Image (cartoon, rainbow, N blue to C red):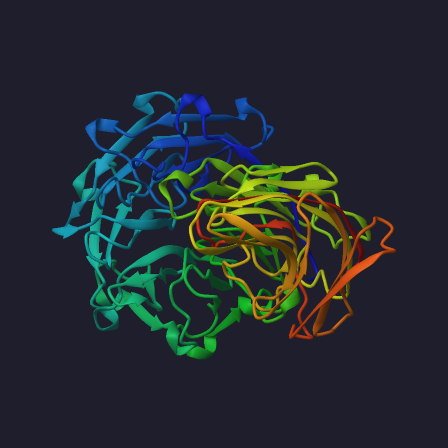
Length: 591
């Protein structure tokens, strides 16, 4: 990589002004404040707008405020999606679902106090021109009109809603709608986000009744909104079969970028070339830089970067000064370690002159995992991501993904206490692509307890030192090219039979029988470009008394790794099992 994603910060805004501020779908700005679009808090769709003063300290509580705009003008003004739209005075929140598909648009007058109900208005635009104008994923402003992007109004929709910002907000005559869903043989439905580029608006294809689709829709703003000749469609699947399922796009004035909300391809369109020509498009396969590419729902251009929001763990950035096809033009970073606040699972992105901001959404597909931790990032300068340097690892700086709360850390030791299989518990650091090749890593470890109450014969296993290109447990999304060391225990009718240190890559595994409560001193080894990995196990800290050498082969000789784990839980187990252990004194001698 030729550049780094730099400093990451996180702020837990969940209890701002005593409100439950979780589950936001986008972020926008009026130039002085950032506003986060309220969607769903894990229990209900909500309207608690979160606001942050841009040029105030990010980690100061007084920089943040919230207001519950969920029942303005007697309407259920809740469940909005995408970055809010600013027209110079008013800020508009895009209706998606408030318990059912919604057309209730919320508007805030930014010249008035934030926490006063009279500063807010709501209008039910759910039935305009006799059409069902509900269920939008984002909107775009062209200087006069706001265009609402149709997704699902009870069925996948191609009904576009437009509001004239020069006219009264609550006048029916200020609104109009057009159904473009008949284009592409009826498949021009289900879009996510849009972008304005001079005379045209581009609507990003997401899902329709057939699943992910690639029908990019373009509106010529020079022609009447309701004229069929103003609308054109291009099937991006003609560029590549997986050019479909995109998120909210961005433009740098020449190119339009479509983020990979569903697949692993990012698409770019050159607006100086014909819209309907496949040669006007190119795609970048994220598998080129990451064996396990993640999805991104939204992107934003600022300076010479395009930044893609981390729907799960990985933030992505592209340097526009470099060729689109150049892997060195791309950088990514696991954002879960930002200020140790589990700052991942974000939607939407916006930039001020110094930072990119990401709206807090949801960590997992579970109601309990909606969150309010806002993420902030800098691209060059101020890099915080760097290659590992030889020497002892500071485990206190490692990120935790610890739903069960079983991990504790100091600078030299990471401990798992009563860890059950199936509970995600990770302690790791993301050093970036290609950080580990030749390996010599010393570490000490001890299995302190292992139990299983399940009947019959059972096995329990959890990882300690591991290298990977993926953020996962040892079973979840694993690769046979991940070398990892585990503690492994066998049980019969609840009685522990044996326990082992194990080196393996899921295809095979080598074992060494160990004693409970005994410290083992280990070294993980690999020559650069070798298909073999060794684990040497010693009985003393000086590593002069060798107990065993475990060797596993079959690793790809070209494989390098991004993540290093100190704890990596196992998914598969009998239940009613617990394992306690620690790893300490991790020393990267060579990488």
